[in-house]
Image (cartoon, rainbow, N blue to C red):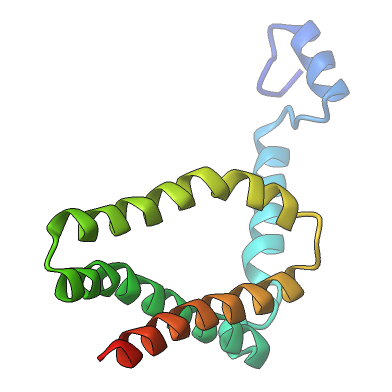
Length: 141
């Protein structure tokens, strides 16, 4: 009867059924084995050393920075070309509305498709869209 539950045999039998240690010694041993399993055994190689992972993340970083710059620059371009703050604000609002309306349905569809293909096509499409704006802006002048 030396255990965590010496006065309650029912709790002892319940703890055996649930495979919960009933003594301090077995509790400390199980905690030590958990610690050894998680921290002392050799851990897998860091993802920061994986070339493909770093290429993916650096490419995504460049894409994200370009998207954020576009979110700031596009309304400014409209403002510079038209002089209308309403049109510049409308461009920014439409970009936000399109994102809000299409994010969830697009996410559901993307989960069904090959992620790598979707990633490449989406980035190429984004680049072509921004490139077309650049071309139109310099062809007008």
